[in-house]
Length: 214
Ligand SMILES: C[S@@+](CC[C@H](N)C(=O)[O-])C[C@H]1O[C@@H](n2cnc3c(N)ncnc32)[C@H](O)[C@@H]1O
Image 1 (tube, helix red, strand yellow):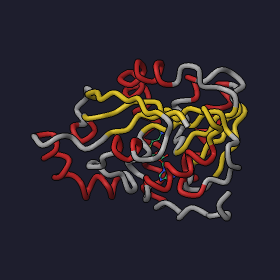
Image 2: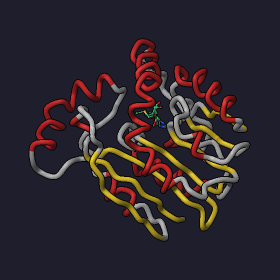
Image 3: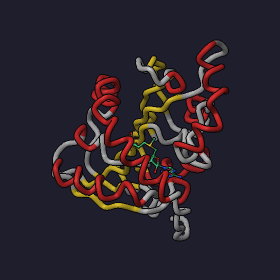
Image 4: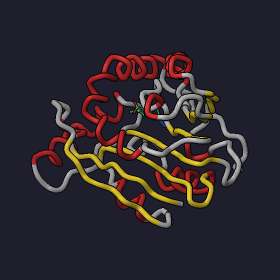
């Protein structure tokens, strides 16, 4: 386990706004991702770690009473996350640490999941190393991420909004090649599909959903 690390405190205004924004948009987002979530979260259970759990929109895809370790460095998400976990009957522990330094033992969880997080973390390679470390052999890492589009109009929009987007969404990059990062992370297998997120939010139109096995 890495030495205890405290996460840098998010901006108090944008930190709160992000939690409120994702609470407001939860249904809209979930309607568009539900099919992918049903598929990749199927059979996850036991002891689960969720990286960047936010307000907890993924908890309802887990069996009741699952033990969930939510790695969520932004304290402004914690209250909503606790409420969601209570409503879903989850056994929740919040870890206010970054995914780059998860305070869980090696091979201590059955599954890890994250949605729209590797776009935002400071060091995706390090977060993926931590995910592999905490997963037991044969454990599954399920993820949905928005990624850089191929050359074309969506890519141009992603480049155009890069800076204000990153500022507003506390570090979120619109131009990451997360598929390559997951494939390079040393998992025994990686299966992922590319899909189009049908919404007016053009910068996050190109997405991937997949499962990697440790
Ligand atoms: C776009 S939100 C997604 C939240 C949630 N997963 C969802 O699908 O609604 C990005 C999340 O990543 C978290 N995050 C940012 N930096 C992180 C880091 N270094 N380690 C772990 N989580 C991080 C944020 O606090 C936030 O909860």
